[in-house]
Image (cartoon, rainbow, N blue to C red; front, side):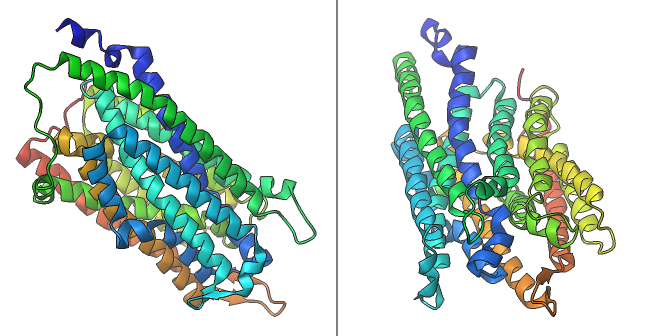
Length: 456
């Protein structure tokens, strides 16, 4: 008993230090995920990409995760091989993918070649992004399991909220500073689009080092848990446990909420800078600053809402409220004549609140629905389902913009009408509300405790 009380997990400093270390890795990952988002307009004007190319590239993030089930295998590996092996391997995959993507963008001559009928530069950049996507998603489920490992029975929702908030700093920096950073290295051809990608790759290398440092803390905690064991160890994960996850209705509801909600946010962010340029007439060099408000807004709010969940409960209700706010934002964005940039700022802040509400309650709720020994696989399955949306929605949006929303002026300037696209996001938001209500009803039936507080 004494050994358990002296565990490093019960040290406030150690617990939060572990969180900060792995959160830095995810911050670098989120920066690289969105570093190309503000560059859509420049990719079209300087490198000859179109919206279909951009949509194809963006969808690549989920290729291997969805079609080759790499994310699900990652979950199996996490539950079988453990946090240290999985975390280091996934961080290394992110670095490799980033290097391939940098090579593609830094080599404009690739555009003169075709690979299976696709612009060679687009295809190789997409391949690198796909490899990076495997590493990023597996890192995400690994960090989620780390937080449960260190914070279960303590400030788990707050910790998950802080991790999300720190990761969003990476997104915010990508949205706001990618174009200015590219302009620092201007050439005769224009901004250096490869410069911010190189910066992101360097950040991922630092993230790999950070996770390696964390492995020493994780090894010490595992040793303490082993020393404190009485010999009645919890049954280890078995492949048959996947069936138990898949027949759990609560799992499917939270997975559907995840894919619907995130399909309304992350793909939106991929096009948000271009939306600011085309609908709100914001200067392309400054347009990324408005979407940057969304992740910056979550930095304080996600831990705040997580703390409310820890101390007051109401997790299912928090998710419902966030889904309603998401619908409101996309509906207003879809109104053609509401095109003042001040309104865009207000809506982005409002969306940031919604983006804080749902994740702050959703991710801790998984640990109430699924046993801890199955958490790695459960998170992997949820992320897998999420990746279907993150792959399909951006690709669909790119096709819709190119085929139904594109206008070319007499002088050759290209513009896009985002009304139809925002209506598509609104429909997804409606379905997220329906699923959130269904999850609350299921919680009442099964007693998961989603409406109950996490800290005694």
